[in-house]
Image (tube, rainbow, N blue to C red; front, side, top):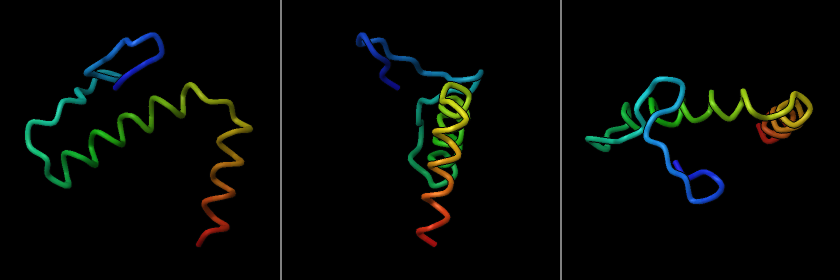
Length: 58
């Protein structure tokens, strides 16, 4: 995952992001880890607006 300033990381919240095999399970695990990380960093208002937008698409 690339961060501002050109910094890259290969683990988030203690979980490795490196994909050894591109399976659905590995991709899901990786994106779930990124999702948890991002949700911790974003403000509540943004997340509520995003979730409301997702619900309106259904």
